[in-house]
Image (cartoon, rainbow, N blue to C red):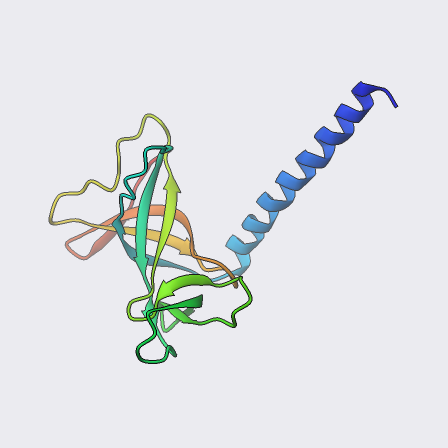
Length: 156
């Protein structure tokens, strides 16, 4: 087998892997629950950054024992709210504080867009998220709530 054939096979395998991950995320977006949640900007103060906004999402913690500082959690949508429940310790849950269940997510933005997390005091930042069966919520889009009206941001 010549090097060109090996390179084409490797390229095909890598392309299939990337497409399968993208396909799974699209399938989750169609089949898993979605909701808008209030988010707060979070700056991890890391020297290496990309063009993304770090956000903290607070979920309602249910089913955690009193005094638990951190626990593995899975997320779901119940009564129109994002809820964190204790996960079976199998490495697939998300580590959260059991009192408020905050989880950090990243929303990637184009280079030409100013930081959408910088808002005036009368505006709240919200994110529409997909809630997969395992893992943290995945952001779909950002929005701003002002005077009780939620308006999606056009960041494309």
